[in-house]
Amino acid sequence: MRSSYIPLEAVERVARPKIGLQLFSVREDCARDLLGTLRAVAEMGYEGVEFAGYYGRSAKELRELLEKFGLEPAGTHIGIDALRDPSIDETVRFSRELGLKYLIVPWIPEDMRNSREAWLKTARFFNLVAERLKKEGMYTGYHNHTEEFKRFDGETGWEIFAKATVPDVVLQLDVGNAMHGGATMDQILDFIRKFPGRTKTIHLKEFSRKDPNAILGEGEVRWAELLSACMKVGGTEWFIVEQESYKYPPLKCVELSLKNLQKILETL
Image 1 (cartoon, rainbow, N blue to C red):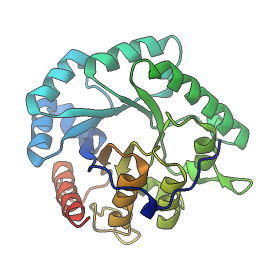
Image 2: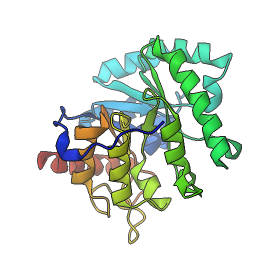
Image 3: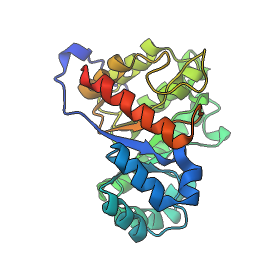
Image 4: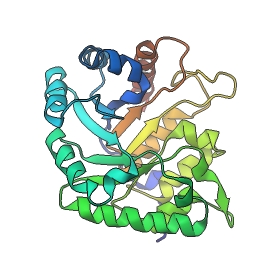
């Protein structure tokens, strides 16, 4: 399935996506004090959070915590087995109660991505899950690391997967991971153009060859172009900040990232 290319200038700008935080960025803080961490994240100005584990809480407990601090559920990262039968029924029930819309898989085994045929088979699985979730008003999707940019007959696994999946499957780009995998800034922008409406959520992670601990806005990502592409073409609903290496305490890093992101958005 090949999506048509849409030039950035040909599409009208949409409303600014909401800004969320991937809680993996502050996972140790969450493990120690989930309530206090969510309070701090909300006070920084984040509008929502994306989960990467539930810290032993029920969906009801998590929903009440989010409501307490005025945060929205931006989505979740879950293992692929949670989307297989029979586990998918419980996954849907939990997600419905928590209010999740985006159920993103952040990792798949090597045998699901080590050849063109493997990627095509993986795409068929995601298509079936997307159909199952559609009646729930939910979406599944896949989040890249670096392996997705290995080439098979000149085409990356990420492209093979994108072309073979239906439009309801979210292509959750992780910008920093993609660049660590060898993708250039131009290739990332081109990818968003080639698959319009598929970047419903995106991970905003900095990339810098000089400073592996760079905060968003301090590295090589051309943020203004990227954010504009997301708003004009990507169909992006959530900008999700993620920080996995730290020059300051994690909460300070994500606060600085948010401030820098807000400054960049003011220029658009």
